[in-house]
Image (cartoon, rainbow, N blue to C red; front, top):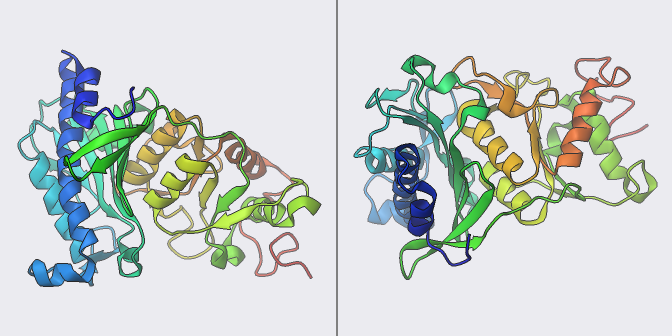
Length: 350
């Protein structure tokens, strides 16, 4: 693709006269339209409570999956649903709803969304975003969102930060578009993004160290050992706590992101949702030359058991993800399901 190409032209070039691709392109165009409104909404911050009745950015309960739900989550969900409503979509699944919404069962595609990922960071002025996954509709519509990630036709995410950007894969590489507010159009700024296979940067919430499994303990310990350790080089640690921001950083300068399973109640099977968070991110990472794994299995090979199934997610530079896979499978390291509070191998040595 040519830098400067706008998203509409890009979708037209992709679709041609193919009906399935045209349907995918129409959904991406509708999501891009919705993202401009969501970007304006989040960009107003506390002013949104003045200019838009009922929008405060504050928690107002929990969603169907038990997470704290803010009014901005609900508003973003409504904006996306309104943008997609005119299109022939078989089913729409959202983090904010317990069950998928059935639209046109005969339509060839369905959509899964996280309307406002990272919304807990809004009050700190952190980047947030919208994640989406586009899937083919199977014969049994009830199985639409129970397909492995490899079935995805397209995936992407919008980042609402200093710029509003779209990271997109159509299964033929990854492109990044940025919103030109003067023309109200997304323009291609980075075609064919590639993640370097190695990296000296990692992202994990180190405050949970005492709960990690031994393979994660061992990997982070090696990173922290720097030039005096087994890896023989110094690493930088980052932790933003917003999945879209972490993914965008990896696509921009490389790195690895870990949100592993751990010993805490509610975290033993991981925390991120497979269908509308891990799967689209894994598709993007692999299309950019990276990798994504639970530590024990490739994310895109997993078949969801439920719409809101949670999984561990390790993604980014391919060689680092593969190293974590090997550590998880090592008989020397996986002797304990979870480490004791002060394990012999860990961030803190006696």
